[in-house]
Amino acid sequence: MGEWIPIGDGNCDLKLFAFAIVWWVLWKQRNKIRIEGVFPKSPTDVIYSISSHRQCWRSLLRERDMGYLDNLRNKMKKWMAEYVKRERSLEATENFP
Image (cartoon, rainbow, N blue to C red; front, side, top):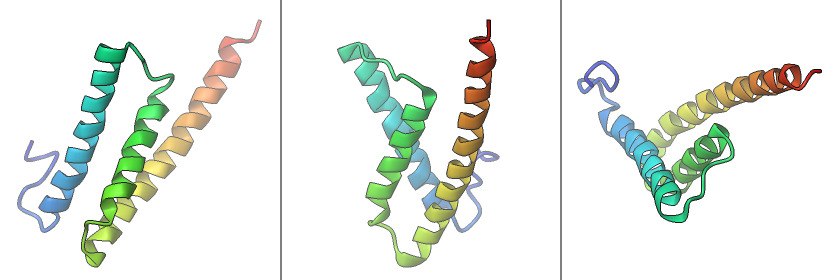
């Protein structure tokens, strides 16, 4: 875990904050599947839920720490755009007769 979340740098608290949000959303999604039998339609649904929770909890951070979270949001947004584009192109080729 020390390589994935380097403990020695100054952003340790923020990384753990972001990590906790991801795990919280995954736990809620797991409960929804187990208890309600509702599955996500797409992996993007889970990613958007993570982003939404991160935005809600962002207000608890200090002003200077918000920039770090904004940087993560921008990286995730870029990744999501590429993922959705790739998925749509795969769907188009799969449905081709």
